[in-house]
Image (cartoon, rainbow, N blue to C red; front, side):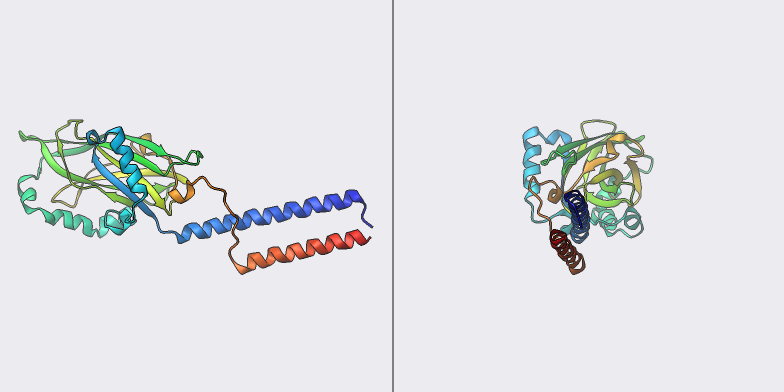
Length: 273
């Protein structure tokens, strides 16, 4: 025969077990949902001097409403860096696109470098410390023995989630750099639309000269903390809403229902004693 103390203790244990099941089921549900979402992002790049505060905000607002993420317009491939280096049609297209530029704008004796990189965390709507929009600013420089130190370049940007392989998330348009001037700083503003779990991401930048497929300079989180462990997440994780628990999989749901039936039977048996 159960007294009130034992009954209350049993009820607490059952409620605790049931709560644990709900949380574990929800965690599994979130994992399934995340793996089913494609990794979609949208980026806009230009010289930093072209971005006023107002224009930067307009770019962010428009990007968030886009129907065509970079993964669907060949600006991003989500391929690993190794895959891009081994078999990259984007680089081949860039190398053969402008024969005139290739002939007159190539510097066999030039040295390229990426000097001074900064990053900015821009949008965090649910105030959890993880941002869906960020920007990366880098200054590409070149040094040569020619009189006019100008070159046409472009960059491929990669992300690594918590130490995992680098994934290509944006290819810039071509732009002109001149010597070691800081007036040609380039900024890429990126918004994660979906498929990017809440985590810490590193950034890597590979610089190319138009007309060639070899990397002329690279810069990553190994070179600066500005590109290390950026707290990011996609828009579907950054909404301010009340989450409704959804249970996926007949096995999990059936187990919960069975557990509730057993608990109710236990209460009725205890009440009769």
